[in-house]
Image 1 (cartoon, helix red, strand yellow):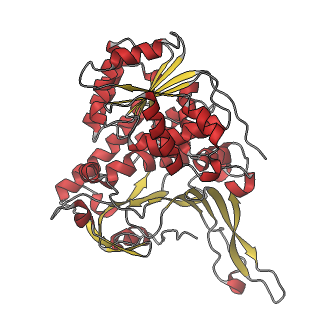
Image 2: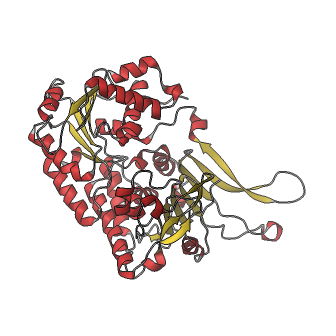
Image 3: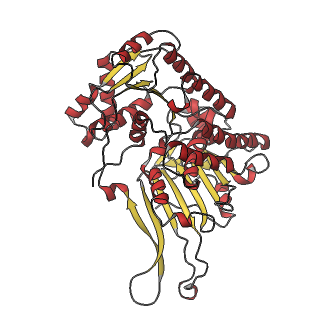
Length: 492
């Protein structure tokens, strides 16, 4: 079975920060794959822009090395790579001066006024405003212009509102694409298909039938060169406010009338506004903070967070667990257990829907307790879904029950390469499809829930608890769920 490739209209993609880490690891490889699959039309251009002094050929050499480092060798073909590199151009620009902007305007004007222009802000958020101002000052925008904004959108509600207001000075809301790459993952999109394209799940997708939901985003790595940013952010800002909250919204939202941008985002906003507040009155019982200590990860000894940071002390959390509740008709009484952390036992992201037990166990005298059905959606590293069911163990000798998974791993089921999330999202920007991007009011509503947690920690003096690297976090996170008579799902 092959996937359907739908070409997009011709475009110019300008990547500010075009020689940075994000461009090298994600953006250029994603665009290469879309070109390799025939989705990018003739004449479309990718323009790197930064303060570095590069010629067009030097930038193509940089891109060539990025592809070698971040694309599988079997996907690199000399002719295809050469064709892709011909699409690449470069402009030296400085956000804080006039240098290079006239050259970028001249290069863009070569394509004509109405071609789609996308400006990707692969730069520090404190430069968004200066780049946006220069784009406006030099008349680089028109009706077919889009701007892509990477996270973090602010570090609290006030700064998010200020950043959104600044962006709104130069771009209409329907031109702004606030990207969260988790929403481009196949499993996340399949969650929508699972719920709304099948009659099987939606009737039981509620508090009457679902016991609880777990969302885990676990990393084995530590700071990985992000010390300066991470110590000012922490796990709550870095992962929960965007990735995990978005996943929770997609699990919990009501069926939209159509699968279109504002219809879907309206329903996500309702979930955000229905979240039970977490603040100084309950953060000590509903949240856990952690910070990794030295230990072992991947079979190797690793340093503590403070050793990685190079500082004697820090109050920054590298682990968060939260018991969240949604105060609406569908989810009343169903806890959502959220956790994320660095230097954990495994690298994986998954959503686990645990259903309630049957109201009466007719097998109790024969086989004892039956286990709860679970639907497990794995986002990484191996995207797919598993439905855990109770069945009879084959063979004679009585009724023996056991739990087994019905497994659907996408790569095996569809026999196609599993595309990176950025591939879908980068092309959605060109299509003008905002379904998988965050709207301004969504971002601000998420911060409206997160801010009181941060303030509650500060008011209560709730410091991060140490946990050994290579484990699943502080023991308090186990207590958080087990005092409700539940346990964290152990990955297969």
